[in-house]
Image (cartoon, rainbow, N blue to C red; front, side, top):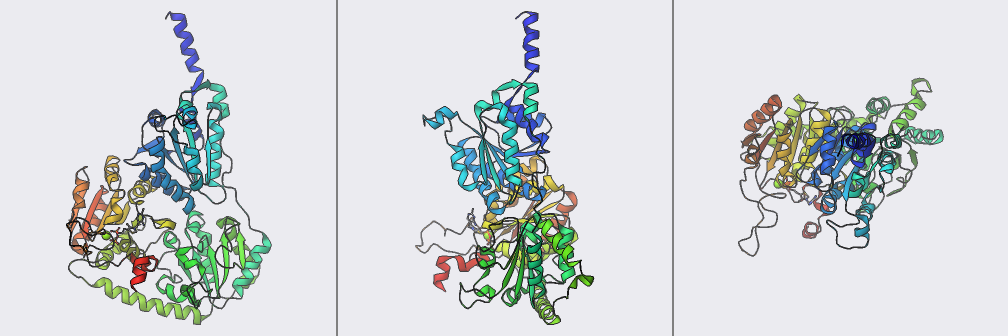
Length: 585
Ligand SMILES: Cc1ncc(C[n+]2csc(CCOP(=O)(O)OP(=O)(O)O)c2C)c(N)n1
Ligand SMILES: [Mg+2]
């Protein structure tokens, strides 16, 4: 090559831009700063170049965990969490999290490399051949494929808009291998990128719908508010608190809405849940769906005479999706719009008349709730104060409850069955969007992915309470936690198995029962293998010291909390959904 042709080649290189760079530039243009993924063909160079371009590229040990991290990052930030995977198997590993994002209404984009279209479509047996776009569609809110470099800007813009607008969800973006190496004129490439303007436009509720909702609420004798994780997602914390406090209506937080108002708030009715649900006459749902987690709004939980009978409540439902109302029972006052706008509109309407034209609920209603709450809290305090040996869920969670109270800014991750249900009811949260857990599906495996994202997004201490089974689904990511030196304290409620460790193989054979694990396993050693701190805790005092040390040092820590293996119940609190157990009753 002579000097002249070298200069020509250089200037040509300078004036073109390839697919890799266009993807990176399009993400950065839209204020995306982190990618959760796992490298391999055809996206290895994308991960390298993303890092070189200043994006934070977090590599995981399994795509499912990267996907869960991306999904919860979306929930916490109102920006789509990005998960990046290789083709077919990597894509499928990420797909579970994409479905999870869609079901939970978290904004997320799964970006997967894919194999050569011509070969895939003729099913000629390409490396990792799969029609990923088609496979993704049933579980994605939207799915797109980009074939030409000049369309990357549009593809990413559409993915962002689809993930964030209206009811958020999981979006799949298919990027075939060939796309990355395509080069186009640099100026045209830059010009093809789109910075998405107002990706989640406000949806203002109709004034007559606001009035209808308030009229119904005003006529209530025993009103109740239920806050869902949609209310937490909305980041309308001050207005939601004002609505509860101005109306004086008791409220129930769903799991991930805990802390939206402090769980210790006088209007929090969690400790009287089984009383308020059947007794309430008007229920206002804020970002909560009447799915299985609320017994579909009917049946005995709601005071219905039989398992499917309506309890007689009237419902107001605030939801961004116009299709949500009437999904399970009649909604008398649907209020469609984004939660921030709807709650603001209710407050504004209430403020129009002096004193809001609003009378607080009767002292009978509030008094009955308060009395029951006090009784249940007192009972719980007694249970928590016990110090049995071996340690049980209660005596261990008493410690966790204190540590969380002393560290209200810490992010709180939770999964398991008993390890989930006991924790949810015992450990109070004090601030919004601190508790992240198994969500709508009650899924195991979110734990370590959530820990990574929670630490990265919030820059706060993370505390994870994990069943020993639940932890196993993502346990290898302790290496990831150590590698990035994240302030994560994992407490494993180790009861030797799924629900408990006491099942026996009825045949007397050498295989243990399907719910039982290796007895007295030392999960703490797993953390030590990667340079983190491992602690074996058999008493509440040991657990307390280990958690306090973890929070103080901010070092990656795993505490193996030895729990009485007889302490749990089958399926935790949802035994009734278990066909075998239900039959036994
Ligand atoms: C992906 C997935 N697989 C399986 C299940 C079924 N499941 C529900 S809870 C659970 C584990 C419960 O055991 P553990 O985490 O040890 O909690 P424990 O009740 O023992 O405290 C399993 C396997 C699930 N919810 N999700
Ligand atoms: Mg267990």
